[in-house]
Length: 213
Figure (cartoon, rainbow, N blue to C red):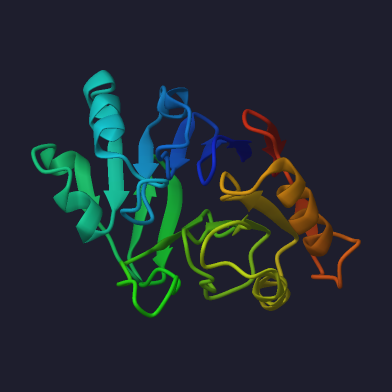
């Protein structure tokens, strides 16, 4: 698989001739979804999902399919069978690429702020995008997409999450709310200069790719 980082929480996954894009939101370049076979949406927040952008992508690409939770699917009314509702424990296949769904709730931002539903996607049993939560899949995986900057994140919790998750590598996502200096500071804590997570910490620039083997 080949992983390409796009703005904020969005990544593009390519395996053979299959292209899957996860969470192309308001901070994501529109070209992220060009030629994609599927778009997976973890939850309804604008930095992960924008209705207008996704409707435009569907209109431009008649073969594009979408998997998301019920709240997101409700905002895509009219697209019909091209949108599939999924939740915790579900499994589906994108042109031979197996995907399983894990998690149910967005992380707590503040007790006074209502929580929304959030699902994570595990692709081919090896790469996990948790959305906005610190969800653990049923077994350790090679690559964790780690949300490093959000109103709900705390570096100490991220370190403990990676330690418990036990991936080979943690790839930084969800960083648009951090300055360049802030990303560097977080990276040091999550990388070899920090207390240690047991995983390689990888930070990709927008448009940069990583071959996962």
